[in-house]
Amino acid sequence: MLAMRRTLTSSYVLLMLLGCQDVESQSLPIVNGTPAASYPEAVYVTASGFLPCSGVLLTPTVVLTAGHCRSLSATYSVTAPNANGQTATASSDWTTYDNDQKSSSDTLLVFLDAPIVIDVYPTLASAPVANGTVVIDIGRTLNGTIDTNDYVSAPVTILGPATTLGFPWHYEAQPDLSQDGDSGGPIEIDGPAPRTVVAIVDTDTVEQGINEEEPIDLFERVDLVHDAIVSQIAAHAGDGGGAGDGGATPPSGGCAVAAQRSRYAWLVAGAFLLLGHRRRRSRRQ
Image (tube, rainbow, N blue to C red; front, top):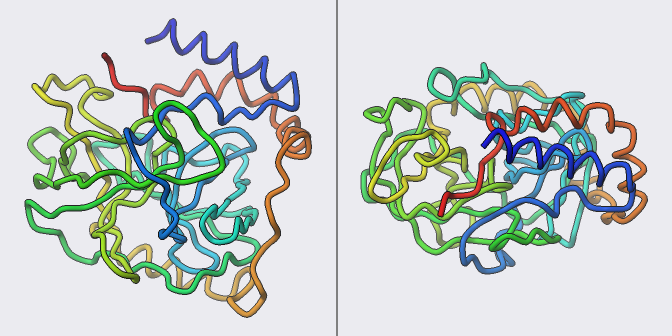
């Protein structure tokens, strides 16, 4: 995996130097997903101009994603592909993640500088869900190719808390359908809006080196940090724009995005040396 990481680092540095290439195009994704057209709350998050993750809108100006997706410079670009392509930037965040998924909640709130407006925002689970609960997960890529969309998985069953695997902040779930680039994507109880977010995509037994007959997804629970998240949302209620501000600007893309990324080129080598600890890796064959 170290050799693979070095190859990835070299490739990403080259792409950054070329300027007009999309760094995110290298991620791997939700397996056999379908377009998440009816999930406007699902977003994707680009941290520090190049590190891609998924996320979910909790309010017009608050996005929930994974703590290991935290920007090195506290800057983010957020896109809601199924909410008329609205985009917004963010320059502040909050997390209690201590870089150890076994001892802290791998969750992150990103506070937008302008609102992304949708009709209905999801609710956040405040209590554990029962074993056997069926959910879906949403991520930003599909079968090895990332584009400007989000994708929803087939049904996934939560097996219960992952405490016996050494991950007390997580649920076990199967089948394991989420991969690179999906970190931070919402795990929702499907149905009509407002849907309930019970967890976010985080890691799995393959990535953690845990030998199981069938890989187990490890979803980061939100009920364990529900009160802290609600407090942070209340504390930032006056920040940024409100729903009445009319949303944000459409995505720019292309060399305009590359120009922004060039400001962070010096961060790339160090950041991607940490990929093994900061992002979902592809499942071993």
